Image 1 (spheres, rainbow, N blue to C red):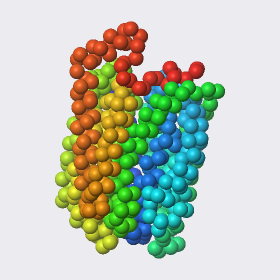
Image 2 (image 1 turned 90 degrees about the vertical axis):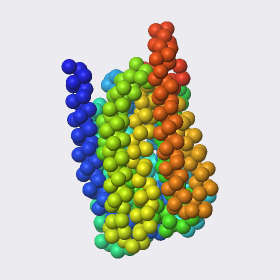
Image 3 (image 1 turned 30 degrees about the vertical axis):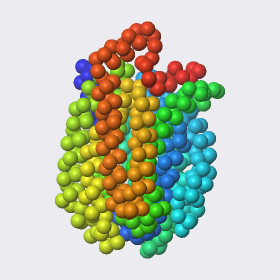
Length: 444
């Protein structure tokens, strides 16, 4: 009976997220076409380069507190108030510091033709602003109320579409900087609504008088993982802006954005399944992987189907976005293996996280991120966006193989027996960096 209810909840939450992501796909498609056409390849490339740079530091704005919130509430709903309060406090402190860091780093990492004000606008929008929206999403995710998570996720895209349409009505060909102002305003409105929804539906936050250094350290593991993920997904856009041209950045960024849009249904399933990974993973990697396996097979099958569809339909891109993006069709065809590679490594990675191996997952992802930077430094100056596409495929393939190997080794019976013995002695599983939040604090 419990298993049936759990499956029903997963199916219902996946349906909510799929509906939300489906509507978001439509909104994003219109938004993307409007903003890409109105900005042009160079302005769009400048904006994409800034967003990619900010994205590397963005995960440290909340220091993984949203994931810790999901983990804590999934196991004990009474922990919500403290976890929510700690997440907000962490974001307020570290988010402000990181905005200043981004401004300094951008002077070295980005070409000087990109104005500092654009970097500031995107940094404020994406570090404290988007972090708050993400925390609100994770709060509802922790309670498995994914209809609210889907609503907030859709709201982000709707607000940006409204902002883009208003901007284009006022300025037929806006600059990246002018879009930056609108981008910040849209994010601020969404963040305010998201915070209010959590306050009304789930309750008020409260801040504990003392937070353990261990809690911050485990949250840091999640931030490392997310930052590494951003590096191997998006650092190539920043590097293209720095070592190639803004036009090439726009062409490649448009193609990669379409890949991200096509992956939305898999993300819906990942959102719905994430809290369950922690419950299943408390019994070890084998239990976590047993839960992940059927979901993984479906997601990989979808990824293969999408790859075939991209190969057939990529030629439509310049008709939608404009002649400036004609090379985006070729870039899209090169990137078509990414949906099924991403489906594989996301579910395998969540298998490790759920079983308490977030530190191992973070280490693997950091290694892949380093690999991605090195080969991009070699390929982008020589082959421009084509080199970035090759580097992306190689990095996602390496990540899928690496986490798959880790899951295979850790799920062997001898390893599971060793974990069980340690548990019987009252010890946490060896090499496990993630413990319940209640254990780490006195009293994402």
